[in-house]
Image (cartoon, rainbow, N blue to C red; front, side):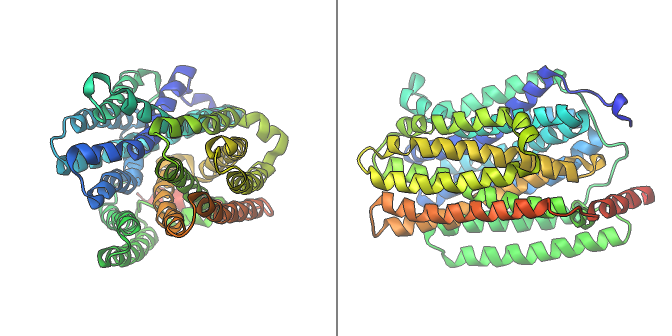
Length: 480
């Protein structure tokens, strides 16, 4: 298919995709705010509270790549709308959940639905845009991702404080259902695309990847909350074993001329391998930072969820504004955009630590300038990171783009909270919360510095691996 014959993504279509990507991060962030109230109303234990969060992340992460392939085969718009409807129904049902067990099951169903529509967003952008139009579309998607993350905190907290009609936490889930169903009703504006040829679904690979990611995410989540019980270590061992078996099966399938879920040859292209490492560095720090901020502001300083969320608004505004300005920034900085953004992020994190220590009484407002710098800098990392991975995945398997990015995001969120979040909690047990936060921010700054180094190395020399990967993928396709 030539670029002239590509279906084009229009403004209304991009708006619908943006709303869907907003919903992905909104579902994650709003749950963080609402879970304490859910636990109080449904009498959930600490372990069950952890499972409420882990159920969504685990099912979401495990199904992403599968649904990316399914969208390539059956039509991305069709899978997109089915996922949105599933999230809408699951969210409505979650609001009626009579007990914590059924609520956890419905959170898992939300994760499956989100896994269906999320990879179609970036794969549709990849299949319907080129050059400057693609850059502008990615900027919008990046902005909506940041908006959903902060919006989840603010809107979720506001709904809990407002408590319309006495609905309490149920209003949070029903608001998500409204967004999902409105987006589903508007999918006529999204062009329907699919791969030129169908690739068979890799059921063995799907099963092994599901076991690996479920064990990893649940093991990290349960271990981080309950102090590393034996079951968390068992799950992590299972995750490593299943991941090794998955990778071996993928290599054998591709060597035999099959169509594995995650073709190992794709990783011969350096931007994908380095890009996923950058995603792990970025998202582990990004997710943990918001988690730690909530612990400091709400638990240690006694701020309400609404006040804590409102204090994050300038950070979110900076992220959204810089994301929308990303095309102009990239024209000026080019390949230096990510390294410069990561360097500014490290500076902002160090300033955040220093400003919090300097004004312990007015902490929430003293840290605002540093938080704004961090939000702007992270936007300079996120958009180009998505573009890097998107540009490296062949268009014919575009569904892999959204699956790879979102899977790395969820795994890194869990890893960041389990390590950095747990580290903060341990430090806060023996010193003031602001001091513990300042110390853990030094680790965050180290992650940002590592991101800058890796991002610079990405553009030092041209890679031939991408051409080899494309040839091998094409060879696999020609054998089918």
